[in-house]
Length: 390
Length: 160
Image (tube, rainbow over all chains, first blue to last red; front, side, top):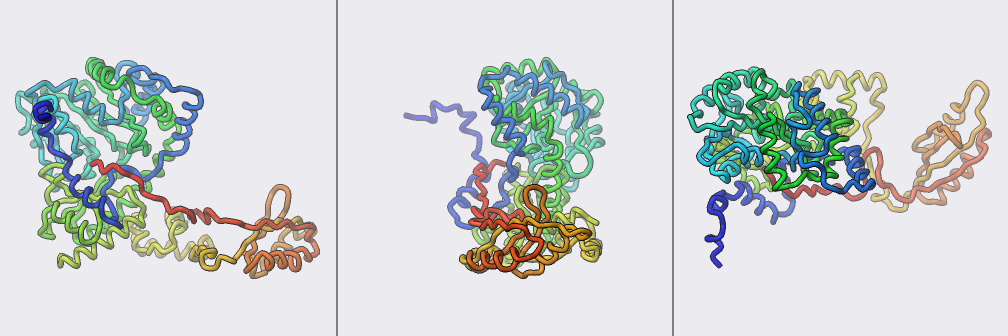
């Protein structure tokens, strides 16, 4: 059977993940030290697990409302108010989804028509471009610059906007660069957007992991709430990746349509995870703060480690990645990562996996113990010496 | 006092002042000064390696001994505690609430050696009314360190 005739050519055209190759090699090697994983090493706090277990013991094993448990939506509403001064109506403006990922997909599907342009800053998380293409949208890439701390500038935004622009994706705090957009940065962007009929999808999944100052959501900038959907979730803040739970918040007419997509594709997010999440929002500020402090310590250690090796590493202000520049080695990102893996068995992710503008950089995650990070850095140092670049 | 440094050192006493400086955001000189002060004040009482002695010599044993004691007028439990803690076999001594008074951790080369030590040295102390010896059969966790089953990183997804 000729499968290529059966399959949707749009799907076939999506390139496979840029790092597959490395991790296929890494998977066959013994003794690899990885800094590649983009997932917390902490287990979900016990209180949250317990709440999930309790819901099972009580037999709460049925569907929830399509939008998610009413109690959870109320907690999300309260949480967003208390943390980020955002006001969303629990019944009309909040949808509980399967991770932030589903929210991103459903929002893009609800908004983007074939031919619409979607502005995507890169280097960034890898899902935005394929999701846009799948609905016939046209990705327009902003290549953010190291000298701008990988923020989107108003000038870059202006020059990317055409009369076909429908949506701007704003992925801050940013995976892989660790960049954040501060209030003043967002105000400048908002000024450009307010004059236009452009919608914003603000992916704030790393909002709790902001190390210098408080996270600011673009939806909290005056006048922006009406043209923004905020996507957030439980994976990163509460170490709940495997529970698959996120949410989208936005204007009622948008959420209403996004809910239709969610309702037909998903029905509802897992009920056990939703009960656990209620506990997370109600009683786990302390646990979140503790994990954040631990990440912060590792972050400083890793930044200092790379800079000591002459691999210029700007301070990542959010998320849990460092993004050091390796161009002084004369190698490309791919080359650096492949040689490092083969010679010293350390797995990093080449910056190019997050867009062309990631060339010259590598991503190193600090979702690892301090001892693990120190061992990896020692191996990278040995590698640099062997290559004669240190 | 700097609790951040204390927390870090209690996890790993071998962090260098340079490493601690990076992790806490202080300068190396400040870290060194803080540590010196906390040593001076007795907040940091020592630095020792945590050794799994059973792996070194699997005949070694330890036991927790419950002592019931008559407190001395004016001295309370301290006099007998001081006496008990002087034995080199005694690793730690705690005053306890509940059904007995002193909890004493004793180590020795064999069950018999420990039992004899209790019989000859501890039960013969005047104010000791009774002893109960509980031998440790297996150590799972010691001072926050898990001694069995090194944790395995089972994160499978190399998501970006």
